Length: 329
Image: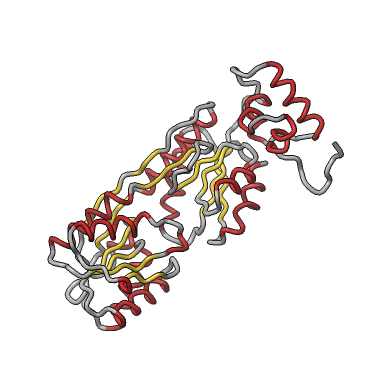
């Protein structure tokens, strides 16, 4: 097969030529046990034929050296991610690893390019991604990958997911106990995380609370989005007594719009968020939120990466959430 000058052969190219899975190629190239010698020979022949150059990950497994961890987040400005990054760095340093950080700048279309660029430089990756799993798998070229805030349909990756449902259901029960009967939500569909909305609607239905169809306002994931969502709900559903925002960043925007309009929180409308950002404690009144430990999330991701590098396929880790009641709801 002729050498392709325009595209470096990938681990999956080798797998297709050898007629095996990409996991088998990884095991064969790294001389792992439990692989048939004839299969290993076929894989290595295919690799030579394609002039496949193993990634830094593949080379690192067969000789000692520092482990480099790649981390991709959507946005370093969003205050959620610095805490997560800090957790990853702390856990990586304890393991003697170094960390390379990149961002997709909230553009999912950039993810495959970033993954391919990072795959040749690191031993494992931890990433917040929105692309489908097959696109991700093609781009990482066999480098161990931990995906964040999602559970893969197949155990091709490590994963850290968030138990959003428990915290959101606790929030809805709290609102019901405070006498709220008509609820709304400022949602962020582009975040590709429907779990919060699903849990919110399910618990509201369980408690016989009203969530009219036009009481769900879809917005972008930003403070500006929160402002726009709050303004829309106040215009179309002024009867709502409590609003749940997709996350604290959106809730902060809603809070700012409430102050601009002279709406009392929680007197006229209660407001709650999700994530437990420290900045939520600084507004007046402080923000009620579904809290999750972002640093712990980073630590769990590094633990997943360590197991992947050791040749294991760990079950997804799940980060617990809890309701933190403050003055806004």
